[in-house]
Length: 286
Image 1: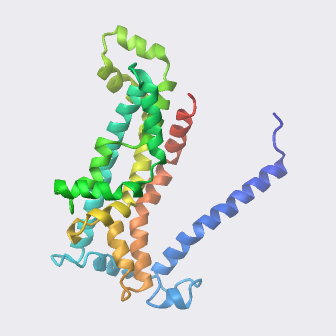
Image 2: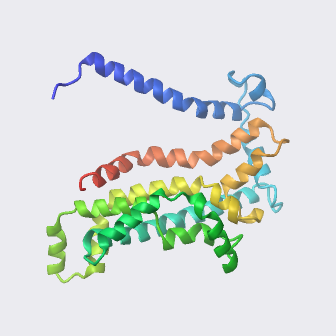
């Protein structure tokens, strides 16, 4: 295969740099606006602050958690703990459920396996909005409204079709000799899954964890429907209510948005290599 010339490489790298700066521009403006005095973000949107007002962050976090008056940041801590709990359990449940389903579709033989897998993939075409009313009625009858259960039950009981597909592809890429050797050593189906297949699929486990973290941490739709009490809300839900308050300065809103977004940026930049490796692994077997 002909290697690209140095000029082509330079042009490609320059295009990637420009594209990266375009994606970075909104985040840079958000950070810049969060450090300005009140009114300056609108009056001079592109100017740098003369003096960085880091106290905007403290004021923004206090306003987000204003429902709890036991401490200046007690409400924000409650919101953060709620979000962290939901995100952590969602990651654990998705990995458990989807890896088990992927293992069954990849390694176990049973009647109707391929047809059932097609039905699972068909679930990817069903929009979440189409299930809102029946799910709400069901959870209301179970008494789960204003609890974390509606946010966690789908991860534990159903998983995600895309993640099931990723695990199935990862397990199919593992040589069958490894499975047969484990069977000859006396391992059953569960032991093969827990001691052989899942450890060899660590890149996919990390990929599913990253996807689930970003989805659960930034989820607004589900908490908006099922969570009513301020003390049960998540960061994104509180941030949405924060943005609808006209008395809140834009600078405080940008400071709160930066705090909520920061964990996602940290997770992405620290795990992007693992994420790419997991996607590559799932593409090695059809």
